[in-house]
Image 1 (cartoon, protein in one colour):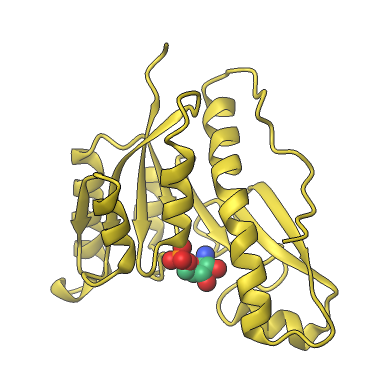
Image 2 (cartoon, rainbow, N blue to C red; image 1 turned 45 degrees about the vertical axis):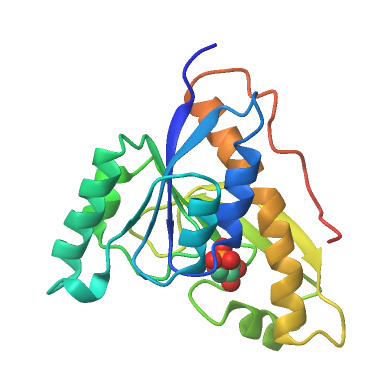
Length: 208
Ligand code: GRF
């Protein structure tokens, strides 16, 4: 059995996406292992999820640093220390500078709760409802200096219902994220290792 790709997860909040990745990586044939869960927020619920799973955790609190660059240097250091080969941003709420992205480009994935390129940035579900779209969803993409603009690895689509509130839509999209991210990470790892991507991401229209 070839060694598994070492994946670090970067979070800021509840970590439900991190949990989905942790759960998926338990499968013996999953091509990646989670080696670290790191948060900029010391009280992030996702840290407890990682501890419950027996995984190493770290906190790099952006408030402890005088600017983005020293914060990102510290974040980079803990990722290097964990010998991370791929980094998954999962509910990570800080914008990363071009400098950090350049160090990880091609190995840095993010999940965004819309069907990019629609509805970049924040207040995503508010944007979707205001636009009157009938379908929304989630996107896993490679991170580039353009915010929410990198190459798309996978998407999951869900219906937008006439009486949806932002909460209704965000709940439905979040469930789709939990299916999408593990599949997208698997596709990325298998693709980038030149393996036959037998787990290529199926065309998913998730009716979650
Ligand atoms: C959610 O709004 C999700 O759509 C986005 O990040 C937020 C927190 O997700 N990707 P998580 O539960 O911390 O993974």
